[in-house]
Length: 421
Image (tube, rainbow, N blue to C red; front, side, top):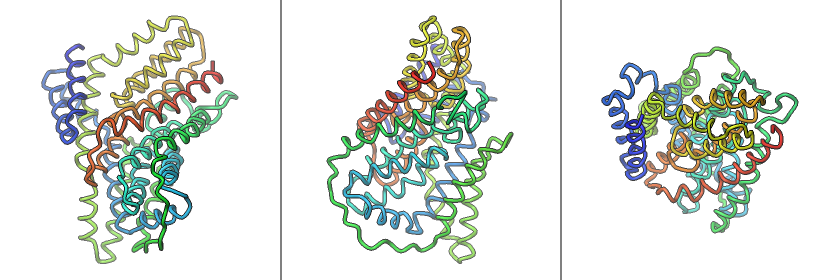
């Protein structure tokens, strides 16, 4: 276990220290986990989440077509007419991302909303870095609100046998949805404080002309189909990914009938961020190696020993330990590992595990906002900014992500405790 822990820590240090080569670091570390025998070679291909990979590829392709249609510029122009300055434009985009993310995967949400943020930044002449970070952290927050909002929510629903309604009302009490929404409200003054320096007045001109509305239709279809797919029982694990890739191919076929098929293929290929794809694939294997070595299990068992018989202490440890570890460990395998641990803790104390389940989901979802590699949406946002020519420093991300998350976590922590204690 110690060699795996050391290699894991070194991997994340190098990823943070070498942002331009983080994908090579992740892939190299994944290879070392196999070479050192920490993760059996036969498990490597099974540990990569192909659903997320396919969803990224498909959605990136659709977004590339969406951007080329000039629709993001038009949305930006229309939004600029509704707000008084740049500060409120950023806040409005973040809240919009949050609303969408409650029903659609965080990465897909980011890829849908981010082009609008980039378009606004270019039009006004400001850096898109704070805009995309705000969109990313907001989408991560709202992902915990519903059963279909994030993979971690789906994991909880499957393990605890919760359906869609249980996230709103469970056992006659308010579900996690309400604590997440109150946390989102708490982030508004935080974002205002962070972005109040952007007081440039909005000068909205004539809205841009849209060359093709079909990519916009594809995005709406993407949202509706992903929501519909969440209600299908026993669906293939790569269903969401196939939906995204299928709609992307439909967009290319549409362009082929318009006589611009070759240009469309080139546009889609250039829109796919393969650096981000390789980074995520490497991280899936690295985290699987850590889990295989028992590092995450060890952490969970330590929480059980430390908490003893105190429900409040156990709940507090679950929330804030999840915040800390999810800042560096992908929250999907972390939540999958911790769900049985927190159930054991609840059973040993003779209490309803819902308190611990919701605390785990709150901490693990928001903890990813502490670092640029803590959540897939963050990694994707950094990749999009890099394609725009902007390298994001660790402090650039943390100065927004940390206060945003602390406000939301504090509210969720208190609300969940008083409802489910």
